[in-house]
Image (tube, rainbow, N blue to C red):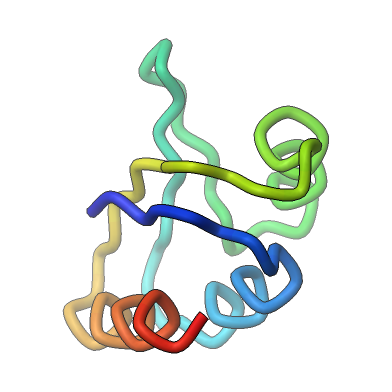
Length: 77
């Protein structure tokens, strides 16, 4: 799933933390960060979200209900 135009990183991570299954961020190099991990969230903040607006990130979501949560996040933010 591609998530675009993340302007509120705090709300994005709040939504991720509410997910029940695994949510992974895929880097351009193919690395995977488990976004349910606080450490991975800090690393991704520094590496990917440092300029406050993220045009696009690729996520792998293991739970279909979590996909719906992220879709609602994208539609409301």
